[in-house]
Amino acid sequence: MAGNKSSEIRVAGTGKVLVAPVGTAAPGNATDPWSTEWVDLGYTTTDGIKFNKKDKIDPVDTWQSVSPARFIYSDRDLTVKFQLLQFNDATLPFFMGGGAVTGTGETFTYEIASAPKVDERALGIEFSDGDRITYRFIMPRGQVTETEELGLSRTAALKLGVTFTALAETDADPLAIWIMKDPAYAAG
Image 1 (cartoon, rainbow, N blue to C red):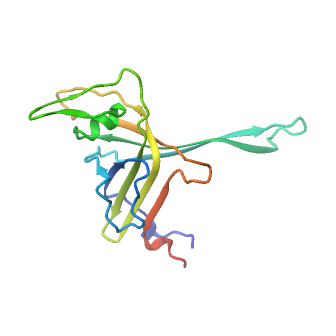
Image 2: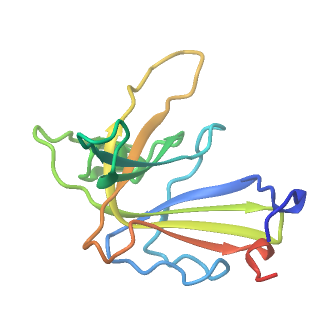
Image 3: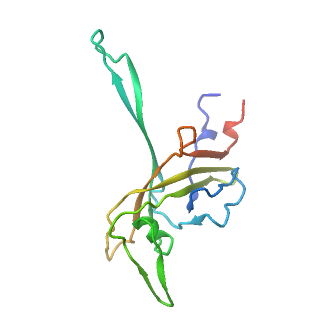
């Protein structure tokens, strides 16, 4: 039921970003644990996660009218953008486009490929607002499509800024899924 209800205002107080191989099952509800195949990417900046859904709508113009007669949906982009603060064997390859960190002891190597390669993954985002409300957002398939410049400074933490774009298997498959443990959605 619509109307002014302060109890339906959400604040993403705490959360996490996880990745897994494409095809990895996500939790079916907002309270089941994530399986061990899901890797938590750790700290993000206080900017949090930014969601963007952009539809490209082409107008059908007619000679008989100055306004469009109808619209044709030609494209949909669904992206999430965030900055990772931790550097490790999960975050650096995620930012750089795949591959693996190698080495032992105290010395490790990561080689940046000379040509881009497909690095599709599943992405999960979870946040809680208090202890009663949990949201999970799952992109079953997607990849990093843009990275921010990596600035090295003596006065600021390094940030691995990425834009992750959803991909669908077919038009019948969802680009993403919201799972909510939230009384605001109860029929009322």
